[in-house]
Length: 276
Image 1 (cartoon, helix red, strand yellow):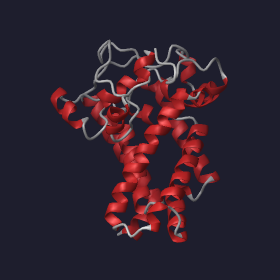
Image 2 (tube, one colour):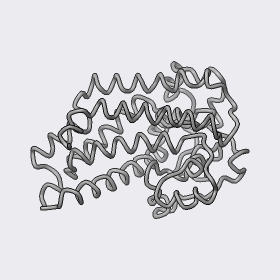
Image 3 (cartoon, rainbow, N blue to C red):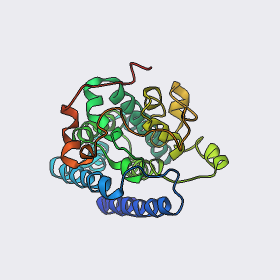
C-alpha cells in the first residue's frame, strides 16, 4: 500500500486537491459564512491561475519534490529519525507534527521579516476569503517554502509516507480553513482544539494588523495557543470584519500579473515584529 501511494503521489495529490476544492465550492454555495464583496469571476481566474503556475514551475525546476527527496534521504540514512530504532507508525506521526510546527514557524517568519512579508502579502491581499484564497501564494514563496521543507527533511529524516500524508493534509486543510463556510458555533469551538477552522483562520486575514498577526496555524491549532499568537474572535465580528490589507485594494490588483508584481511594489507595511 505504501509503495502504491508513493508511486502515485502526483495523481493522489491532484485528486485530493480537486475533490476538496469541488466540495468546498459546493459548501460555500449552500452555506456561506459571509457575503461576497467581489465577484468570483474577478478573483478566481488569478487565484486559480497562480496555482497552475506554481505547480508547473515546481515540477519543472524541482521534479523530485518533497516526497521524492524524502525517499532519497531515507535511502541514504540521513536525519535524526534514521539514527534511532523508532517504530514506523510513531515516526510517521512525529514527522507530521514536526513538519506542521515548521510550517507555523515559517508562517510567522514570513510576517516578521519585511522582505519575506513582501512575498507573503500577496496571499493576504485577496479582497474576499474563500477556498481559492488558500492556494493563492507567490511562486517565490512557494520555492522558499520548498527549500525550508527539504532542509527539515534532511535534518529529521521522516518516512516518505509521512511527507506525502503531510502534504496532502496541509493542502486539504488550507482549503478547508480558508473556506467561506458556516459551521455551528459550538461545533467550531470544539473542532478548533484539534484543527484550524475557517472562523479561527479568517481572523488572520483581517485588515487590522494585530489580527493579521495572529492565528498563524494552517493545520494544527496548538502552536498558536502554545506560543501566544491565538485570538478567539475578530474585534468587528466575522460578518463585519474587513478582509485584506490597507493597500492593494483596487480591482486591478486582483489580476494575475499585478499579483506577481506585488512584492516589488510599495512599502513592506505592518508585519509581526511590529504588533499594533
